[in-house]
Image 1 (cartoon, rainbow, N blue to C red):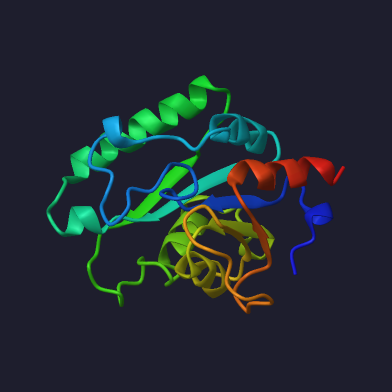
Image 2: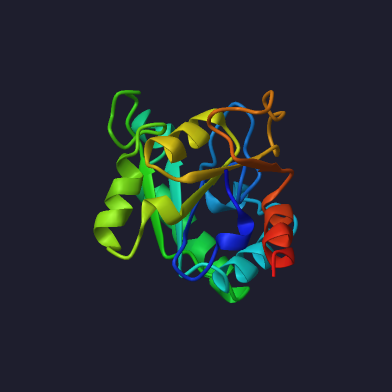
Length: 186
């Protein structure tokens, strides 16, 4: 179980993108930055998270690229503009990993832990046992568990499953609400 009191400068935060940072486009994909909308309060949340976590990593499945509905350049443009807006608000995202594979067996496709292992290779300071995965789907929670992380389920796009749930440590309604709980721990 995740004890918010134990979180300190040694921890790493992993975030899903759609449905966590930005409003998820129902039954579709975000094709360009004009469709990208931060959830209310999330630029402030990301600013506050930057003061808590030394590493903030986004991990996102992006089948729209694999299906040929958008290009890797389109995705890179979305991520470049997203990180610029986060930085302008005083926050930061240290790295973004995505999987565009259509195969559920691909090691980088959530719930498989490949993106977490890639981040750990790129950032040797990441201790997955001192990491949190924040997501809005059970596949995000299973990704976190498969990588040895704690998990935070956000009910932004779906109802919280019956609790206790083997893949979920804690739940919140939004990323901003999670940040408020972290700040109250002190």
